[in-house]
Length: 193
Image (cartoon, rainbow, N blue to C red; front, side, top):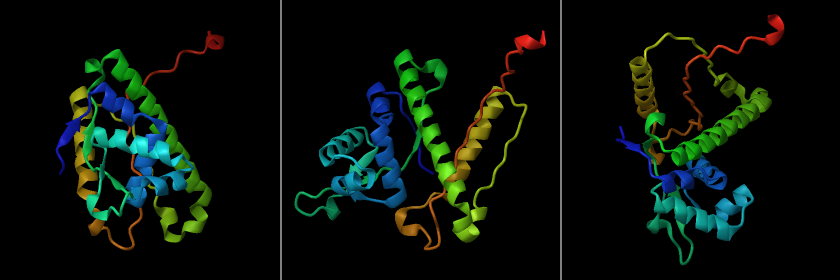
């Protein structure tokens, strides 16, 4: 399993929280290595801007250049796999909180959009239409147990991660998201009083 890497550098978080960079990272994770030109075409972006964003992501270790695939001025990039974590909220500066809040909203919205795309095309997916197990649970946990639950989840995810060369031919990319948060009672309805 990869060693957890806590990202608490504000500039790295800002680089990661950029919407175009998030799309580029997702594309690289889904489709494998790409050039800035092929990424620009796939995502409807400007090639020059794509090159800039790739260099920024590389500066913070989120992507890396594949020198062995380079041809002339053509540079190939891949997403760097890892177990990236963020500091607990109690240790975040206001600027780090703002960057993480922005990134969390953006990635959650992207996940909801991806799930909607799946639902709209589900009937055309054959056996893969069953590939959306869903569980919603209400647990009564201590703070330490929430942390333990998260670490168990990460161990499970890491157990199923594969290097690009080890992916079976019949495998597909599958999104998995873990979200846990304290239940907050809704405010009482003032009309009920």
